[in-house]
Length: 167
Image 1 (cartoon, one colour):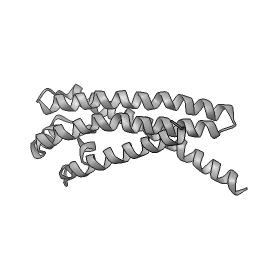
Image 2 (cartoon, helix red, strand yellow):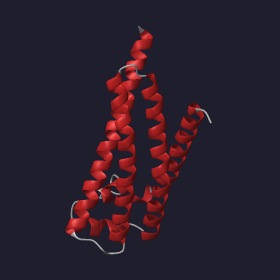
Image 3 (cartoon, rainbow, N blue to C red):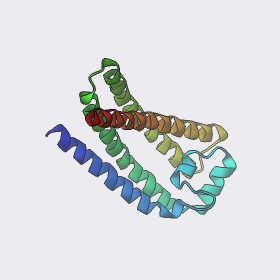
């Protein structure tokens, strides 16, 4: 299978799972939880978690977390394929090295997302403390920072390549 085919399949699977998750979780967006599931991921206190769990349907939350376990490999595969394509277009060794390190970050983000999901499932079952809530929020933050660096690298690379083509 060609690299472009792998990339296209990874894009389609990431978009499809993201669309299903967003549609399924539409009810999670409230005045108290404007970021939907991310509001639970980043909750910083027992009171916040208790309030979120009190207003959300637990079956819907369980389904959404289950769907996220499908989304994790989809977005990870997409980021890795995107990074591989981008790395192959860079001629500067240090940009290739950064890209290769970001492939490891994509795997790390997937692992962090999985741990975060397990912690949220535990919270759903009433097994949470200030420490577990802090761990969930810290892990989610680390995941988002890692993904942010990947996206920044990919977008910067697009701009660099676009600028090269224009000159």
